[in-house]
Every structure is written in structure tokens, then in C-alpha cells.
Image (cartoon, rainbow, N blue to C red):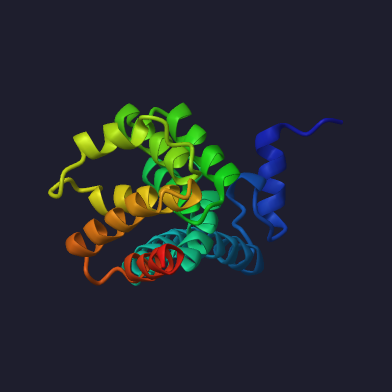
Length: 202
């Protein structure tokens, strides 16, 4: 004999049980659920903290004229935030300054593909060519358009100095280093590269 649904529920209640609709999570299950949710939130919070920490570390390293340490932080930063335009561009620029041209091209291409500034891409590609000693007329264009008050002047002078050295244009390299020191007297590489140029010109 089939018992009606309502009678079945009443029978369950009469035996001291609960209808299935009104059963609550057991304390253990609730605790597990809470722990999983808390762990997820903690992991998300740590991820955001780690990303911010890596960005600050990269900025601090660059201010301390330590591009190698900055590059290590930027590699990790872009792995965690592969679509961040500022991170991609700074990674491209830092890799180029270190002479890591394949990495610089990869980061710059990713920056461009994600809608980065065309002017920044154009300048960075010019600096990449110049720094490798592939100067052509690019140095003339850079020197004509980037004056002492330009926000990128120190980076342009650094690339010119390195490129002129690669091309063994020692007088131009010495001039680039002198201008670099005049703009940023605290840049250690301006003094170091200038000293190397003077040694070659003796």
C-alpha cells in the first residue's frame, strides 16, 4: 500500500526525524564549507598583495638603478597579470636596457597586441635598434625630438651611449654620456660608460 506524501512526512516526524526539506547542514559540514570559503578569500587577498608587492619592488629597484632586480620582479608580475599594460611595457623597457632583446621584443609585442600606446612602441623600437648599434638615421631623429626636458631623455641618452659604443663611434658616445650626466648626475651607468669610452679614446 502506498502511503500519501503528507502521511509519510508525518510518520517521519512521529519517529523523531525531520522531513528532508527541513534538514540542516551538520556542524562538521558547515565548518568545512566555512573553511573552504575563508581559504579562497585569503588566497585571493594574498594574490592581490603579492602583485602589488612585486610592482613596488620593481619600481624601487629601478629608482636604485638596479634593472636586474627590477626585471626579476617584473617577470613575476607579468606572469600574474599578463594583460597589465604598464607591467608589459616596463618589462619590455627593462629587458631592453639589460640587453635582453628577445625578451624585450616579446613583452613589447604583447603590449602592442593588447592596445598599448603606439608612440611608446615606436620610441621603444627605435631605442632597441640604436642600443644594438643599428643606428642609421634613428639617432638624429631621437636627438632632434627628445630634448633635455623630455620625460624619457635619460633612457634615450643611455640607449644612444650604448649604441654608439657598439658602433665604435667613441666621440658620439662620450657626448651622449656627458649629456646623460648633465641631466642625471646620480646615474651610475652614465659615469661608468663614460669612463669606458674615455679608456678607448686614449
